[in-house]
Amino acid sequence: MRLRPIKWYKHLMSQRGRQETGAFLVEGEKAIKQIAENRPNDIIEIVTVESSSRSFSDHPVRVVTEKQFNSISPAKTPQGTMAIVRMPEEINTDELPESAGSKVLLLEDIQDPGNVGTIIRTAVAFGFDGAILSDKCADPFSPKCVQSTAGTVLSLWIRRTTDHLKLADRLKMKGFSLIVADVNGTDDVRILSSNNRLVLSLCNESSGPSVQLMKLSDQVVGIPIDRSKAESLNVAICGAICMYLSTTECNDSVADPESF
Image 1 (cartoon, helix red, strand yellow):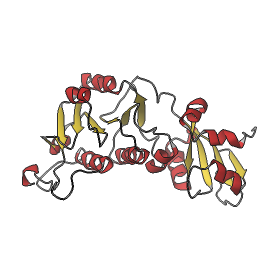
Image 2 (cartoon, one colour):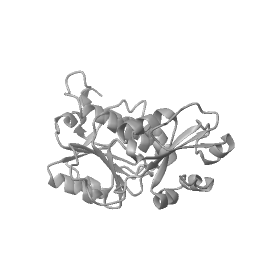
Image 3 (tube, rainbow, N blue to C red):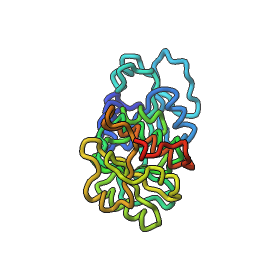
Image 4 (cartoon, rainbow, N blue to C red):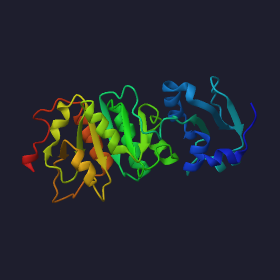
């Protein structure tokens, strides 16, 4: 295999570079293992330092010096092994997959890559099938986002588009309920457990859901918290609670909003 120049790998740290090459970086053996177990054919190459003892016999391996590796690693503390992974071709399309599943995330303008990555990882853990991201969301294949997903970024389908609300509307026409989680939501969050076909929307913490999203929503739920001590929850924490409730038969062990 012809060796790529080191600058080619550096190019993958930018969104433009990922779009041009159709590839992204996954660093760390645990995250690579997650990709290898679920999407082995999407691993293009393993890049590792000379001192690494890890063998990836099922994939092409390139050994580089520690200096070279550090120059292409986006991590503050490089781990010595990374995978070059093929990015899904349909990521930036406006078409839903043939089978969207039964639970889908809708992320609107969440700009912190750590939050987006954590939400995706949580969604995979709670059985969500896909995620629709507005174009103002953080790039789900950026290094920080991929790191936060712990290698689960390919474990569900993803669309990142300017038409995120159109995709949500198409799901509604297929029988999905669109439920928005918002700090000012008044509907009981426990309704999440009763929706067999769910689109759960999480939004930018500062600006909240857009007017258009609110008009499209079926219900807007709020998580009961003690606002005398904490004004709101981080969006990734809010998402984790909502996604847990969407998989659980709510009962008396879930707090009653009227008790706050």
